[in-house]
Amino acid sequence: MMAMRKQAMAAMSKTELAAILGLILLSMVLGWVLGGPSIETRRILATSTSMRNAALCMVIAMNGFPNTDVDVTVIAFSGLMIFPNM
Image (cartoon, rainbow, N blue to C red):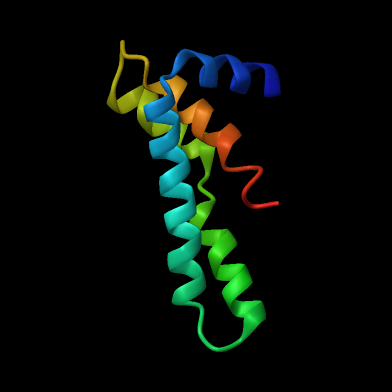
């Protein structure tokens, strides 16, 4: 699976990858800010807001946008969201 993610990330431009990473980090910051006073709640909300169900996104992307390369973006996103959330 990581090989597919690496290939997908290699197929995208640096600008596209930066935009995806920016979305992930912005989601984490918003989750942290809106997480309330408890550090545990902030940590959980920051992680959960930045993670998406890549399998569900893939189904929606493949059915909603047939004959496009939208799957590359979803696969790259699934690879990029792992490390910031660790």
